[in-house]
Amino acid sequence: MTSIETYRIFLEGIRFRAKHGVSRAERDLPQDFVVHLKVELPVSSLPPTDSRARVFDYDRLATLVVEAGTSTSYKLLEILGERIIDRILENTPAVAVTVQVKKFGPPTSASVDAVAIELTGRRGD
Image 1: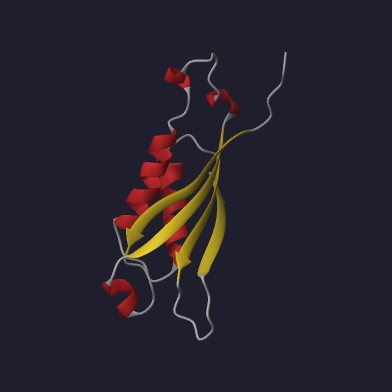
Image 2: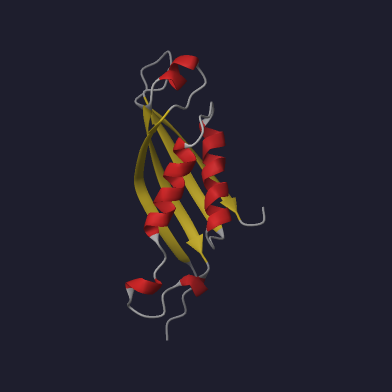
């Protein structure tokens, strides 16, 4: 019998349009954001059989990310990342969440394609 130590789900490329940014101009027009998510679940959440009925709902995770990203306007990507982590920890049995939030065409003096932040949060921290 195999002893599973860790159960993680990865969702890559969760996309939404929102009005986040420090400047007023950034918050006036919707911009594209991409989120990559790593969620650690208790091993007890593993489905006991090869049945979709007992597997963790990936769509729920994506929906929580999009809701957090589109329900409020944030000046900082760091705060948006924290809100995504909070929402997932509050609404799922996740024990840890790593989120990367990417914004395209940030207002910088040099030409930059995108900027991203990455945060990790744990239940109880």
